[in-house]
Image (cartoon, rainbow, N blue to C red):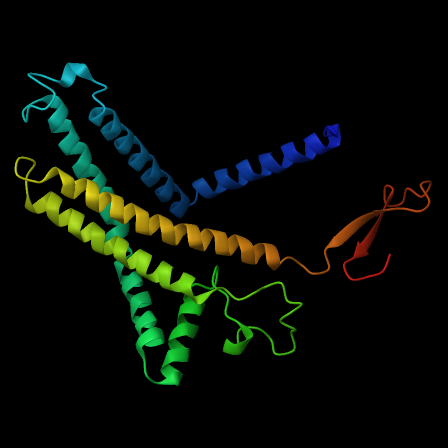
Length: 254
């Protein structure tokens, strides 16, 4: 097993430092600061709710842990309402854009006219251009490009179905959760409603997010410059003009 050299460790450390600095700069942007505060609130209140459900604070179980008037049950309700409000920020705030995507999806999947069908798919591809890639048959890739040699293979269309419906169902389940939390009090609200709708909303949102992240990662990796330089040992070790390596573009003979 070859151990990493000092230079390799320095390069890895430099890359990690650059990533941390880039993240720090993003945090201090308006959007980054808002997302960071939002995420910290979800983690903090969610963690507190988890600890309360695990009876991690016996002092709050008075007169008993399951008593409606105990501090434990009261704080469980407070935490649940705060988390519900936090989830409503994304579930309700992103609803207009999700409804727009669903409208374009209906044009794509349900329209009888081929022209409307194509326009709906093209519009969705334009909206989600950072992770969804159309094929040559849809006019997304240049006609002079050979599909067999182009590394940017089109995104399977079922992934657009999952993303559009996953995001839309997240808002739908959040509406159901909000109705249960606001229309009923903690004394007559069935306990299964909160857990069910929170679980469903998280699952559909996570599924859509994972698909977008993986597809974006695949496209970015495949879209790297085709002339990326290769490092090949020099025939003459005494030539140190390139530090012992020759830069050769992909596709050239060595």
